[in-house]
Each structure stands twice: as structure tokens, then as C-alpha cells.
Image (cartoon, rainbow, N blue to C red; front, side):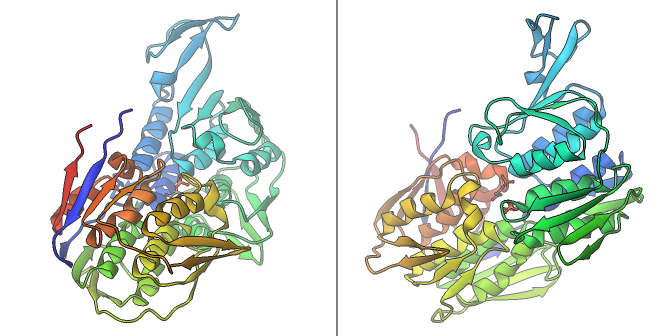
Length: 447
Ligand SMILES: O=C(O)C1=C[C@@H](OP(=O)(O)O)[C@@H](O)[C@H](O)C1
Ligand SMILES: C=C(OP(=O)(O)O)C(=O)O
């Protein structure tokens, strides 16, 4: 697909406005899977516009209607394996041996479907973008195999695509799972736990990364009528039925983080983000505390949050981002732009996200003369050669957060060109339109 670049400019260093953010991709993806598992008893309110959530909804809806998943990828083959029909929804003859779902770049959806689809007792191949095929899934596949699912790797051991064979019979109700690679594996298993005939006890081995996302899962399950116990490193969910209820998807705090960086790089800011609360299920609401270090005050009133900026010297030297990995780019770019030489921990999982985010940050920050130096578990910014150029080209590496974390630099850099502007659709499709609302100019680059 053709990539469209844009040039961002901003006159003046004041931002004022009201921005209605779309629903949280994380909450929405959970609500959609819970809705599907409950067979419609649990409704989803405030569906997110995030492309990843829309894709997941489309796939789940098609499954429910009994239509082959993502019809464009459906193939019907004869008994010798020859393709006799593909790309069509109306399959009336032949043996349907393989439906293929292509989840694109949606990591959370990939992981949730790896746990959910085996319960449907169909043979389905689950694949994703080129990058998705490099993002590990082995820990979750191993767990699903132990539970009783027959899954094989289509290309590389431990990575998508995977082929899920029909015929699931629960073999055990106790699984031990590594906690330090991705919390999404744990969430995926917790989501299906109450639908398993014997329920599930998960024992988390080692450290648990991205813990607030697991807490979000359990809180949403509880809202949907599913109880759990969590003692030390063991979470248990018995076989239970869902309550008749609705899950309300809150606005996305990860998306809000870019408004915090815009405020942090401005001289003056008055922004209102409706719908955000201080008691959010999203761990990324910690951005209010992180950005307080940069002089941003968050006041919760009128059903949302007001942000104001008061210039102040940044004191905090160490940021641990283990519980909020999606804020890493936001916070690191702001520190770099302000020349604040902080250290960061908890970045271990960044290398397996939409891109290797450490490498991407290092490459792009070098364009403003800033180094992000790895020292064991700690990353340190060296801003000694920082310089703000007149122009900068931001490579985005198919990563929405690279685009959105670097966009606020347009407040300091007169002409900021951002590669592949559509990349933001993954979680925040209205991002560029929202920037225009507060006075940014967004000009498409004619290629
Ligand atoms: O469960 C979720 O909704 C998510 C968990 C996190 O992933 P990891 O657990 O892999 O860190 C986060 O980075 C991702 O954007 C969304
Ligand atoms: C890591 C992310 O998403 P996912 O893992 O769902 O692709 C993200 O949104 O930053």
C-alpha cells in the first residue's frame, strides 16, 4: 500500500482546545472477546475506532454468523489440496479445509484469538502482517496445547502464522506460564478461562510485565459477572456464566499521552479531554503522574480531565515504565526534546512490539543529536549534543506510536515531516484531525 507522508507545522507555542478521544483499544478488544464468549449477553458500549479493534470486531462477528473468517482469505480445496475456490463468501461445494484470518498488525487481537478460536472447533489459520510474523506467540501456543488445543506452526516455530485444528477437549485446568514476555498471553487465557469446562488456574512464572493490563482484564471480567481469585502468583477462574450486562469502553489514556507531550513541549496549554477519569482501568492513566514532572497539572472535573502547563525545571531522573510500556516513546521523546537526561527502566518488552522500539527511538532521536544508551537493564539519555533542526524527517517503522510520540516535536521544529501518516489508524485514527483542531497545520506531501 502506498505510504502517505505529511508535513506538520505549528505557529506559536500555545495549545488550547477540547479533544474527544476514541475508546481504548485494550478495553475494547477485551470487551469484544467477552461479548463473543458470552454469546451476546455482554454488550460493548462506546466501540473504539481503533483499526485493531474494528478488525477484531469484524472477525468475531463473522465467526458468530458462521461466515468463514475474513472472506478474502478463504480458500476451498479439493481432496488433493488444489484450490478450487478462493476469495468468495458463498462456498457451497468442496471441503473447506482452511479458513485464514489475517489480523494485520494487531498484536493484542492476535493473542486473544489464539486462545479464543480453538474453542470454536473449526480449522483456522491465523496470520498477520510481516511484523506480526516476527512477534513471538510460543508461550501462548504452548499453553493452549497443554489445555487441549491442536495448533501447528505454518512457517516458523514460535511465531505466526499458526494453524488451529478443530477438536478441542480440555486436558488440564492448571497451567504455568512465563510472565515476562507479554501480559497479553495471560490476558488471552484469563478471557477464555470461565468458558472452559474445568475453569483455569494460571501460575505466573517469574516477573509479570505490564501488570495493569492483567488487572484490567480481571476487572472487566468481574464487571461481566466472572469472579476470580489472585493469590501471590496464581490466578484462578472457575467455569462460570456471564451476566447480562454492558461493558463501557473508556477513552484511550495511551492516546491521551500524546496530548500530555504536546502540553509539555508548549509554553502554554489548556486542553480538555472529556470522558477520562482518575479511576480508569487503564494503567496508562499514570501519564498524569509522569507528566506532573514536566509541569502539567491534571484536574478531573466536568466528566473529563483539564490539562494546564506551568513551566518548571524537571527533577525526576529515573522513570520505570514496566507497567506502562506504551508510554515509553511518549516520555522518552519529551525528555529528549527538553534535553532532560533521565534514565529509564522496564523497557525489555519494547523490542517485540510493532517495531523494535528501542532501535527506532535511537535512530530517530539521533536526528536531534540525542543518544539513548543501553546500560544493562537501564537506558540513559545523553543530550550533550542535542540540537533542534529546522527540518526533520520522522521514520515511523509501521508503528503508530512512533508517529504520535514524535509529532509533538512540531512545536519546536519548524517543519516536521512524518512518514506514513496512516499508521496512526491502529489505535487513534483521528489523531491528525485532532491536531488541526488545536492549531497544527497538517499538509500531505505529494509524492
Ligand atoms: O493487553 C493489552 O491490551 C496490551 C498489553 C501490552 O502488551 P504487553 O503485555 O505485551 O506488554 C501493551 O503494550 C499493548 O499495547 C496492549
Ligand atoms: C504494542 C501495542 O499493540 P499490540 O501489541 O496490540 O500490537 C501498542 O499499541 O503499542
